[in-house]
Structure formats: structure tokens, C-alpha cells
Image (cartoon, rainbow over all chains, first blue to last red; front, side, top):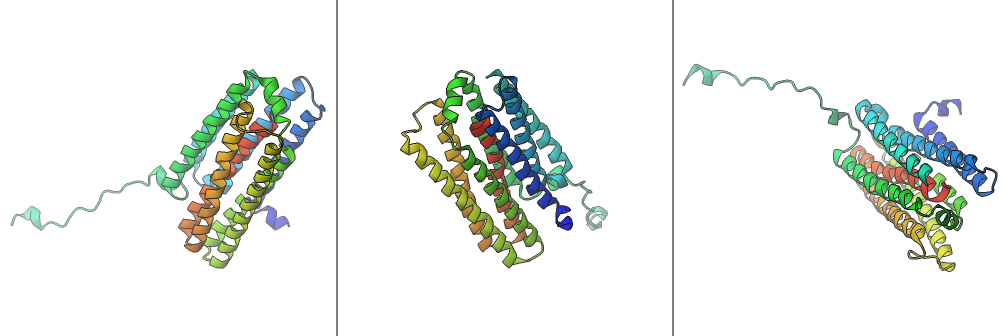
Length: 93
Length: 195
């Protein structure tokens, strides 16, 4: 078990499951009225940040960009700017 | 014959490795991945842009979606991506049977994803919800439908690379599958979760 957790692929998969679980839990909390007012907006922003984190895990581990620093940096910057655009559109709405 | 003609050819000048050599897998697959991400990225940004004009209508329409089913589909797809990555690892070690096994497992989860998606569409249809119901559902059907079409294409590609099973083909096929996975982790929160 401890050895398995040292495997970057297994760690990436576990992170993706955990981040997806947190996103869904936040959305359920909003839809059941457990969050209200600014809490809904903060929850939405957190969901977008979690999506950005998941996309980064897929790029670096599943697609192997962790071994290509130049491209990894480029994709991370582009993805970060895109996530900021989505966050801006969400906050305006 | 002059002296210059007798001289051996000069050795080729040393060329430092290009950053393109650093890129894992096939360059054309990356071109495809980036172009697909641009298409879906534009679609999701347009979705959030139109949402600005009717936030309450979008929130109401979103309540008709099955968040749990979409959450299960997220687990299914990221696990499928994990299996595809394991297939690449097995291919690099020359273990063809294990490679084919992980590719088959990744494809099987792709089919599970599609079955859940079809059930979701059937439920919407039973409530009379279609592409023309409102702007939210137009985007919903276009984006999730286009993504589902990529899942179908991905299953076919994984099947083809398992027939012609070399480290290079498996890496290229898995890269396409990861792109499908990447699009879903962006699409799922924007369409199903954001309020």
C-alpha cells in the first residue's frame, strides 16, 4: 500500500478522485441550501479552482508533461489564464 | 581534379535538441489535443458568457441535471484514464498481453460512461427536455454530445492500438483518451456544478 502511494500514476489517480469528490460535495452543499449568499459564489470559485487543479494533474501525469518542463510551463500558464477567464465570466454572472 | 574535390565531406554541424523533442508522444497528436481543447474551451467560455444574460434561468435548468450520475461518470473517466496510462507503462516494458488488458479495461469504462450518458439523455427526453428547450440545454446537448462523440472515437482508437500494439501507438492512443478526460474535468464543473 505504502509502495503504491509512491507511484506517481496512482497518486495522480487518487488526487483526481479526491478533487472530484470535493467539487461534487461543494455543489451538493450549494444545491441543498447549505451555502448561501457569498458562500455560493466562493463555492463556485472553489469548484473552478479544483477543475484547474484536476486539469493540471492530467497534463502533468497522465499526458506526461511533467517530463517536459518547457511545455509543462506553457500549458500551465495557458490553462491558468483560461481558468481565470472562466472565473471572471462566472463572477460577472 | 582539384584538391578541394578530394577532401572528405565536412561533418554535419551539431544541432542542439529542439524543445519539440522534449514533447512526449507524437507532435501531431498534440496539435489535435490543442485544437480540441480550443474548441471545447471556446464552447465553455460561450456557455458562461450566455449565462450572464440569464443566471436564474441557467440555475433552474441546471437543477434538472443529474449531478450524481455526472459525478459517477467523472470517477469512471479518470479511472479509465489511469488504466490507459498503465497500458502505456506496460507497452514500454514490452508486456503486450498486459497492455491489451489495460486498454480493454479503459475501453470498458468508456462504454460505462456512454451508457450512463445515454440514460441521462433518455431521462431528459422523458421530461420533454430537448436541444431547443432553452439556451442552457442547447449548450448542454452540444457540449456533452460532442464530448460523448469523442469518447466513442477514443474507444475505437484504443481498440485499434491494441491490435497494432507498439509503445508508440499505445502512447498516441492513450494521449487522445487523456484529452477526452481533460475536457470532461473542465466540462463537468462548468455545466453540472457551477451555480
